[in-house]
Image (cartoon, one colour):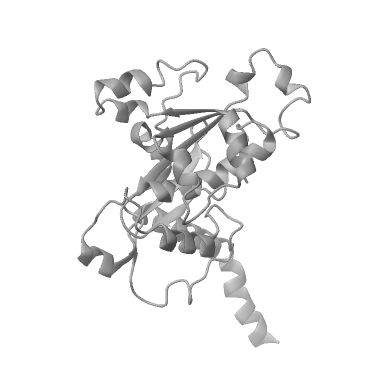
Length: 259
């Protein structure tokens, strides 16, 4: 299930939505990207071979095998960030990057990827382009992308899409994307640590038709996904299921003995 607040032609928009006088304000898709440094996976056990995803490529992660090939092809990207080599040997997945609607906070399908090293531009490229491809098909013409480092990330974005080692978008999609209004902004709290030029150019406060969006809602999603909270939630569910089935658990063995 995707975001019910995002404009979806044929689902939650009128047939003449493109003629609406305030279409830029109402029919804009807001995308936020952020990395979580706590969602690690240590290099032990059989990994995905012995513990594959039951959802395959139909959930919130980008196509897995395609992503692996993409990372291999773009491993030498100049924007690569470094982490300890010892850490790489111990940890198979160092963190996770995910995208969500900046208004509702709903995670976006195919917008999540695992990171095997630092947080690189190419990782976000893969997740973001899968979302953009879906939006292009809907006919939405205005997109706001909120990212901690959008100020430098966006500079060579279109060049990375046509990198000779891996084409992220077809020529037709690239031409369509260029006709769209793609707005890059930095979340309000993060913007305070940027240079003065960023505060002027990438601020939600100075951008028309974004309402009072702050861009920070992507950060709040991680709270329920961190290790202890996730395990606690799973254990609460286990105890609940055991509680409602306790009568049957006690009764059935006794009934079998009587029989």
